[in-house]
Image 1: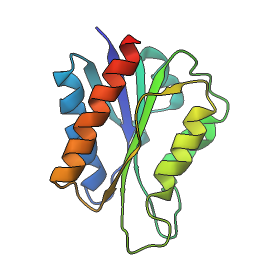
Image 2: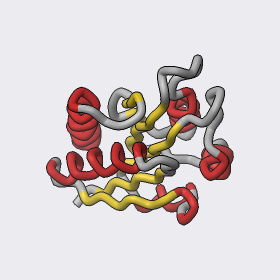
Image 3: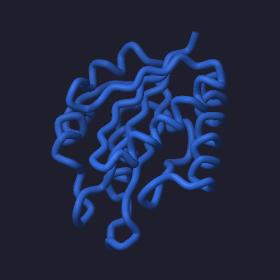
Image 4: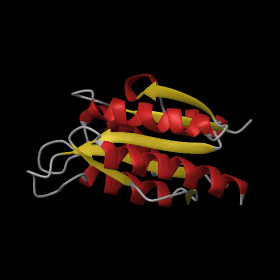
Amino acid sequence: MAKALIIYTSLTGNTEEICDILSDALEEQGIEVEMKNSTQADVEDFNDADICIVGTYTYGDGEIPDEMLDLYEDLEEADLSGKIYGVVGSGDTFYDHFCKAVEDFDERLAQTGAQRGGNVVKVNLNPDDIARQELENLAQELATALKA
């Protein structure tokens, strides 16, 4: 059975909820999912997964949260060739750099040799029905990319 690992961080619970929705949608696609908080995970954990997913919020003026910096920096040296990846996260459209950390992780993961399996999903604050649909679509795209 294909395996997905979601490494996430969540300050208000929004990003965790986003990752829970994605996890459920991936399981509906027949993919085994493990979720790990970024404080208990490192980049090597992705070695055992077919699909590597990062869930992050964006802090302040577009910054990556402190608890995600180690993962972000470690991805610079990582080789995830042959793996599929996805990135999801929450932000607040009030800020100029909406979900910039999501974009930063997308770029960093692309440099690891992994293939992006679907569109990044950026959620304003907490997930609504539109965000749920985007997350379900991402799960389907990731599953399809894995089979390709």
